[in-house]
Image (cartoon, rainbow, N blue to C red):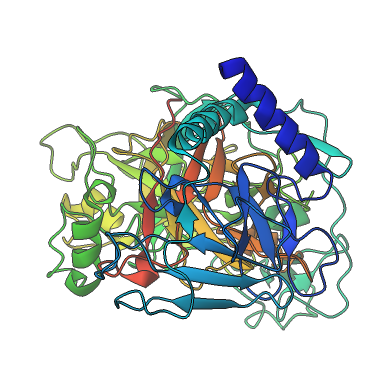
Length: 580
């Protein structure tokens, strides 16, 4: 029986495939001249005036256990060639209809319009009731159900052919890890393009097309040349262009260890804001360990922490939530020779967003405070969520040997930075914790001496995705947050066909390429002109900076937040977490 069943299914599929679109193929839409039907095991779903697609037949489309497929006006089983056929969306409406649906979608394959009849009545609708019917006798209906069940099991490993392209339906659905390999260190950074107009404003455009600051060579606290004769003065100088490019001077860290290299530095602070360059929003700012009323964040962080408690909870043994920082720009934006081109940009293919560091406030001479000594505060852990670009922050953020911070000349390691170190501009909660031990405590100093090391991110809970408001089939913006271990994310891809094909997202494709350190970190999908819109549900595949890769085939089921959540801060639990 099973062999015969499968033979019958394959025979029917072969016949239909000659005239109908394959699974995930187009089956309608304005201007479409191809097939208006689908192969067996799939149905044509309308997604607006311009696109219809063949989708898996879903059990949610049957009226009850006795009904399987929908019929046309003449009760013909799966008559896909009819000008009209019905898809049932079973709602169990309250009418005299044996508990079955009377939500009948009348689909006209000529003009692709739907007419929905959702009336609750006594079977007096203009269209026949219950257009999900048994076909033939009960034995054949059972047989069809058996075939369908077998078909849905085997399709997870079946190869489908669309046009001349062969693709394999993924053998796995749900949440799972996959295998990927970070490429060999063979790529080289390209030349920054010559701009058509000045992108630098008052800063200087270098010969290799990046913007650098100007300052006075005789004043190591200056941030421009107004105090030494202006921009044309011989005393007006600029740092080398590498300070304003995507960094390629830092050693790549793929595997982060608990005890790494300690670096001496200094840290400033810049306030509490959700507007960091990484595009993390309230993530990283809000914490259940902070008095939100005292911080004037009760109205924003209160609802956020109630909705997403894991994203506000500190890991065991350290403070993390509320601690974020911006490193100097050529650490924030980097070029890594072993990575791809970040979906179209060879010049900066890595952002340090999500990396974690342990930070200690030291004495001015670089030595540590003893526990219980006046001035001692516990170490903090923080995540990178922002950038401190060189051009607008010449005093602190141009990197080792190029900073202009004479006011901290009493710091042994303060100005200039030691080779291989970078500056951190901290959020106020982090700075207050280092100076007072409390996130809302006093900050008497604007800059402090510090030492730091890269550490595995200890984030509790799963990886989350912030789906920015305004997402839809043709455009979306999202951020991946709360990543354990390496912390960084190197690729994000989406799929509307369960992972048969993947679309790479881009981090701010429209950024000012001559100012790469200001690149926005959110991942963006923008449909090409005339392209069909994305179809829900969307699978998401995320690759970490350590090369780990996870897939959730049902990650985005709706472009809008549920009614009980803030649509401007809609975070989705992706159901997985990295391990290294």
